[in-house]
Image (tube, rainbow, N blue to C red):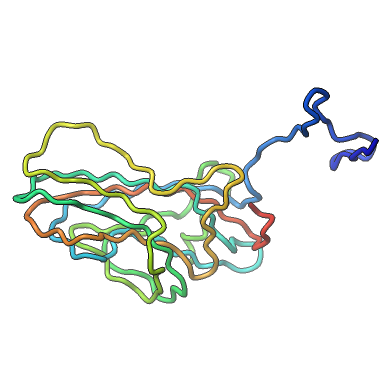
Length: 227
């Protein structure tokens, strides 16, 4: 009978379930410097042009020993109409991978990510975004795009129908993108990131706000074994 030695102890064997002959494993986070979560909210805005950025996250790798990649684990969005539209319409937002990102987007409000801000554990390293990257969201207008190349298609889209009369309702959060253990996450290398664009011209008078939540993990290695 073949046996497998434990990777922890030279005198022990790997434990195998005697009934189903299945290995017993423990799920754990990826090899990481830190995992972070941030939520940003726009101001009240109207008449946003089609295919214009509302949110952006740009990753720039640090020096040796610092974060070399960022793995996006979850992106969520809230779409909140605050003033009714004069004509009902669809509003849509799409998340696009941005590559060869050499100049940051501008305008809006930049996230404060220095120190312990947005760490999921205090002992983790400060996010690399605080030193060399950027995360920001629009205020009363869209962001101004920097120098970057977006994919032709979004990797996630959220849409809502805004009527001419607002109704009382609870705020709903839509998961744009999410990965679980064993899934391939969106991996951002040096000068890569993602943006969330407003996809459809807001052609009728009305006011919206959106909220964006991002959870990500940073690693000091580019090895494919990281995740």
